[in-house]
Amino acid sequence: MDKYLELLTSKLEERKQRLNEFLCGGGAPDFAEYKSLCGEIRGLTSAQMEIEDLVRKLKELDDE
Image (cartoon, rainbow, N blue to C red):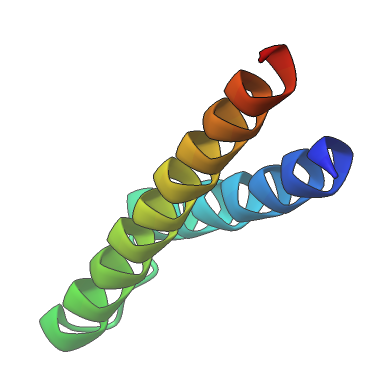
């Protein structure tokens, strides 16, 4: 199961990197799009944190 969660986290990180590169390159045509993309990055980061918490809890259960 851990490998699936790691794969998911990796995919989320790849998406964040692409969005960051797009924004840093001046890709957002207007402020509304910029805000939307920043929101997506925040959402992806939040999802990664939740997955990392889940992985940590699963490892703790395995150690018991």
